[in-house]
Length: 127
Picture 1 (cartoon, one colour):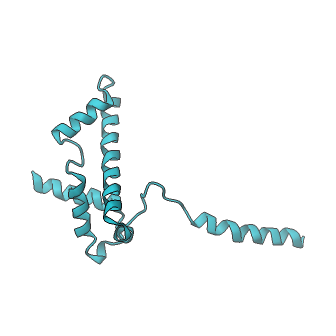
Picture 2 (cartoon, one colour; picture 1 turned 180 degrees about the vertical axis):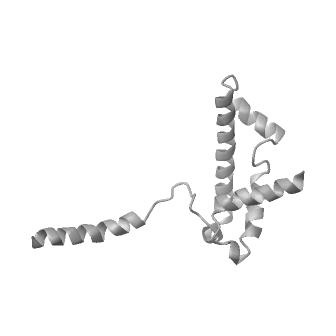
């Protein structure tokens, strides 16, 4: 009985930290604190990856809505016409996030949320 209790305690002590240490391989949980720790090339890479994923998803959506539209053609059309949800270049968004996270009250905001919110504001100003 005591051996089972010890085994239970050992499992709990071992598994609880493992359960709380959730990996974030896509960077979805990154916030302004993480942004501040990134080097400039890491920031550029993060934003570029975010934008590539966004435009790829938009192209897939267009393809699924109309099977005759190849995904590659949809990507090219979105880029050519600046019609994607995120129409500005990676350097524009990186610079904007640098300004956004300058203010410490914005640091808890997830990077993806800041990109979405800031993009909405930039698009309002470009119309």
